[in-house]
Length: 386
Image (cartoon, rainbow, N blue to C red):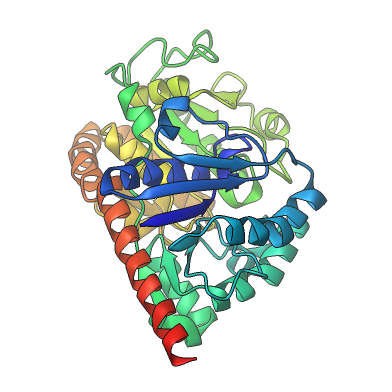
């Protein structure tokens, strides 16, 4: 099977969707397929991950040329490079896609509908304009969680019959391969914060943006009894997104300068060490299409405190304490419960490993390929009926 993939998520610094795509490609390569990656710019991924893969890239990184490439140049490239199927792994298919081309589309979330105030206006505009058209053009739609599949069905019931639940895998395999097996008492989980980190710590990891609900996490941490605040630290690891709250102002407001460490963006090696050394992960997001940090933490045996909304209960299974992300008191209560009860932590830690094992990238790739075959058959059938 000849598979073409919109690989722009691999060209601009890896985040959630980029890691997802890289993991799926890694497993698809094992399934006797030929893969061609298309992007506006060179791919910023390890060279060995592209072995045996064709890559066609341009040099544009600016928003307008970026859009022109995807809507005008990419369809022309697809005519020059015949494929059995073209996959849009990040919510988009070109409007001018050749009619004969079988297509698959992955939807990770519906942030723009569920919590529109937590995303950039430009991004919301793009989703509003292009997602409905992409859903219409897709022969098969892959949803990364049952929650996202349900959101899609509610949003566009007419597409329900072509939506397939294809869960993501169990975190970032690159992180797991870098695990140094330190425990949560480790002294040097990350070179970027090791000089300040001297106590067991709660970890948050992710892009710093409104949807991650960090203001309430800080408020919840600050409301812990003084002895717990002094016994634990809170590490916030992640690069700046849009609409970023001023973390330092919030930290100073709650007088937490000694208890809270903000690392900024961290490398995979540093993130691996942070996970391996964490007492727990705190992820009280307002909405997640999947919530990859949950499984990343679980793969290290780290228990999780996360929200009772969207996909998070589904992904966390029985290895987490669920909170109402809008209730600071609930966040504080759950933190206190886990920090004071080592037995509970040990139980959730055992469950975390088991929960991570429910997911695998091998399964994701196999289900993705099955969906591709279904899409090809559907497109071929339509061509016969014309």
